[in-house]
Image 1 (cartoon, rainbow, N blue to C red):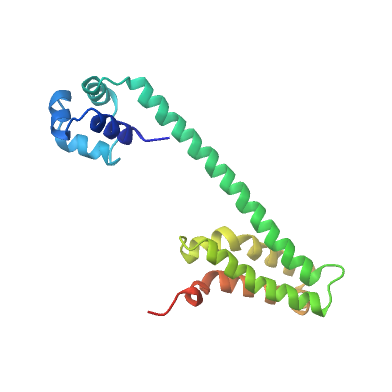
Image 2 (spheres, rainbow, N blue to C red; image 1 turned 45 degrees about the horizontal axis):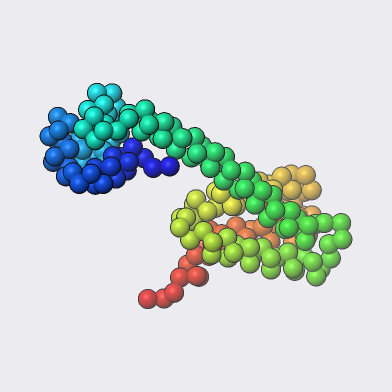
Length: 186
């Protein structure tokens, strides 16, 4: 959904009105119109009513469109959180299964270490818009908590010898520092 400022901007342009003309007919400061259209401010109360009257818009329509946008962003946030939890569980499951699972042997442990390395680069490749701290918190926190829990439950020597510690730390290290390896030299 579009913001109120975007809807006001689109309506003003479709009617061929300049910002100055809108400000004059709505009896609002020109800078106020500019801030509203650039989404720096959101019109409320009397200002919203005066702008809507000048543009022949229904203020309730603008407000209901804005409420739908807020509801949509909340549901999008919940869905993103849900998928982040699933991704974290999947990473932890893969690393744990490959290294300390019931059928884990030397070959599967080496596979787990390699997968830990590759998963880190996979996450970096698809999340290049995130900085490394954000990426670590979103995709590595589950692995970090899993490693701490495994050390507490299975004792440190068992986790070290199984390869889980190395695979997990390698994944977390690549997640945090790996973007430097992906960047092309200038």
